[in-house]
Length: 126
Image (cartoon, rainbow, N blue to C red; front, side, top):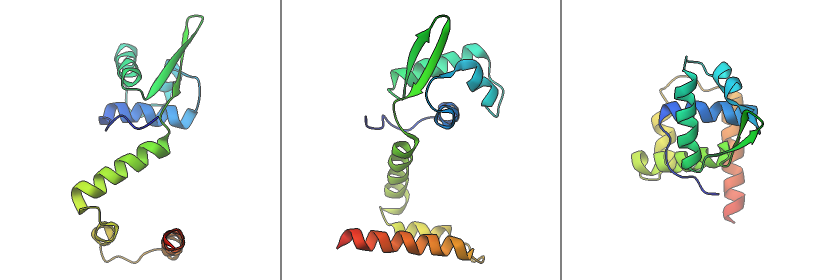
């Protein structure tokens, strides 16, 4: 399933918990894992909206609702990353990377990871 658009921060916070916990997470488990306080009724409103947007599904087990993501975290990240890159940097990955660099030293491992990514992209382009 494709990504259904950008999530507001409050809904994204909930999806981050669901993605981290995996399949069949309950509302109490979500509330417990959230970094900011939220009432149970507010959580249920958010969960219903996420379900309507196609981000998750709800399965009832007795009196318990279990929520499972329909959109992977990776698919959402790709969609958001592409949208961000297109809107702010005209789709230019190099302009984006240059904007992130603030003149501070870059960790050697980070540079190696970036080089490996560039090498793999170069190989794919052949």
